[in-house]
Length: 262
Length: 262
DNA sequence: CGCCACTTTGAATTAGCTCAAATTCCGTGG
DNA sequence: CCACGGAATTTGAGCTAATTCAAAGTGGCG
Image (cartoon, rainbow over all chains, first blue to last red; front, side):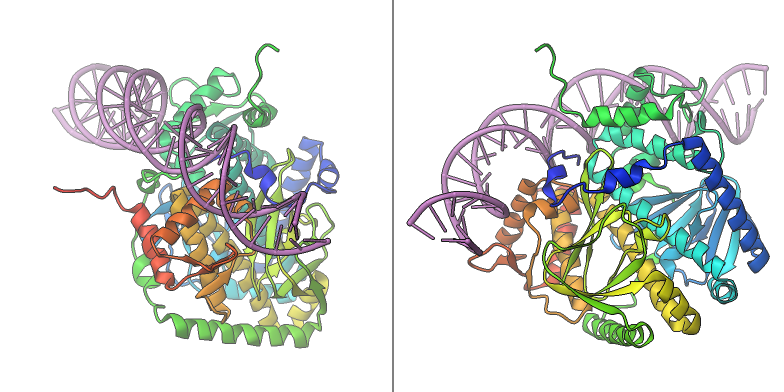
């Protein structure tokens, strides 16, 4: 599915983009600020909405495609996958959710959820009735901003996912996936040097649009290149000594065929 | 990129999904209702926000990645593409927008737009300041619902796009793209038997994650199978005698290899 | 009328898939 | 505690869908 040529396909160009995005560089500081902001947000939610807490375990489904919409869920701990189903039976992991992410936005439009939300680990979600949230937002506009920010982030991220799938070769997609996972943890103040993938190769492959074998081969190659390292006993634990090396690996995959001798 | 096996990869199953989604069948009536709803929505926007109108022409960029966020745009006529840019120069069409769609949600979270929005045709957008919209929503909660519905639809659709790219082979992706385009027009009360693609093969290919040659071949095959028909003189006009035939074509692509003689 | 951008089609190449087999891990029950 | 069985993973070998490269065809527009 990867295809360098399409890169030049769509029209215009880079313009002021790079400059504008070059600003936030100091990674750690940014993450601390983001993490700080999340704490405030959670406090706001807790005070204004007194959400019901619900503990979930791996495999639990908090909502299902087709089910009547009513609640939004804020992920307080654990990991979720969002699974889309097609009428003809295809199944697709379309999103991964971490602490602080909201779940259920897809249900607002049609008044029915459009996907399944499945826990991949033990965790806790806060259940918020959409009606109650709207009411609370009228009283506290700051809450409205929090809500919109969460939706906006989701939209922006979904687009990045589509871009990865459409423009990166398989190996780079896996590397970018690990980078994204590590980055997501970092933003939440969690350690990133050693992460536990809570998905099978098959799930990762489904999410990235490739087979489980391709995922396995890509991970092996990443390990061979010392970009990642498997913790002995159990291939679900991955050590990432340097997240930057993952980005570099992605770039290497995109680089034109290395001309030997010349 | 297509890969039937991943279909079984992710866990659970179909549950109540099919039943729930089998409800809206009577296509025309549904579209009339949707179209009616759109008119009401536009009236509400016009009355409450008195948005500034802006005429655009093909190629016009109404906002750019990196630019400071401030406005949302409601597409009143014409067609837009949303283009994502990566730091390393990859370009990806991540969305297509039709009449009634909103543009700019991606900018709320980071206070900068994350993509470019480019007109593909002459049209008109309504410019709404996000601040003004929030203020108006406090006075008129119906407006808030309209706003959230638009965001939610976008999230749901982005996921469907990812699913298409990840689970459909190239030919099916092109067929599904045409189906989506026709469906989008139908929802807006426009004719769907003859549509004008406002994108080059390269743009379509970029959007669908394949090369322009593959798009061309897929279209040729669709024409050979009489699922579509090219209007003579100019290969941008496509006749779709029966939208259902496009869905059938997609299913045929997914079907297990037809066993001959047995 | 002629250029240029877009499109189509063919032929050769290849990234990633399918199929298959071996290996490791982990939970379960004896 | 260890043996067993099922699930997940790894790796190899061959195959195929889609890409790359190339060349010819078409249409719109100045």
